[in-house]
Amino acid sequence: MQTPFAMCPMLLPVFLALLVSGCESNNSSPALSQNTSTVLSQTPGGGTINVDAPNTNKPNFIYTPLALPVESPGDTFRISLSSTGVQSDLSSINADVDAAGRLVVFDSLADNLVTADTNATWDIFLRDRRRDLTLRLSQTVDGFDANGASIEPKISADGRYVVFSSTADNLAADDSNQVSDVFVYNVETATIVRVSNNVQGAAANGASVTPAISGDGRWLVFSSQATDMLDDGLQTTNRQVYLYDADSGAMRRVSTGRDGKVANADCFNPVISRDGSVIAYDSAASNLIANDQNAMGDIFVYQLST
Image (cartoon, rainbow, N blue to C red):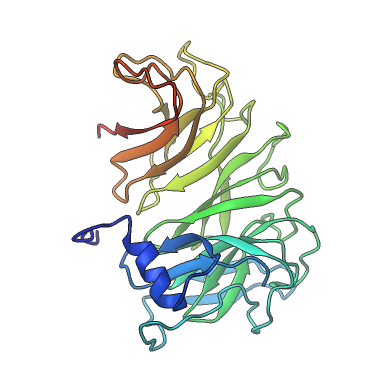
């Protein structure tokens, strides 16, 4: 929905990050809002929103296009704060930001960003820069702690959906696979849905990780070791990339060649274009294209036919 960068799109986040910091640093995992106005980076160490009750942090989020505070080029702000401005007491990493630069998601080990955070593991948080409000997203529908680590958040460009992976078994019903699953959080309704399901709609029989999401939240991609995602007779023990359609609930494997053969090596780290039409991922598979003889990991792109 926003026009692409005129030139060097892959170098722009790095260039802007240097402008923000003013010097070289050991920051990692930068993220760039899709209107190019906000750069996020992580450094090791150191609408209307209502909360039902102080000890649940369960949000009822109605997003309205409120303007951000006036900021000057080169300004740097810390995001990993509680709603009262308290600094996080443990590391926060893996930030992502919506297209407006207002909503930032990240995972953190801190237990003081919200009240009643007692699970002593990684959680997913959302920071509303306009409201100076921090909410925990990785929790049960009743506002209780997730009983496993939740990591790798990505937010849709419109700020409505957040996808992440978690080993918790209390975020969705009948989660008994004892491995990581992929979940999507609806910011407006404060609901969590597991999307890494098998063909029967139950928890898949293998770990699902590294999710990504399209700009409108319709398309989600992730990597999975599960062998029961589809009932097409093409299952393999190699990690594959899957595409989930949130509108229809349909699942498809995208780590395949033109002949339909499944990748013969693990496939990792999928990303998806804002309009959901292109998925890229890395793999050492040798059967996705003709004459692949380098015996090395390559980057592949899957063009979605809509």
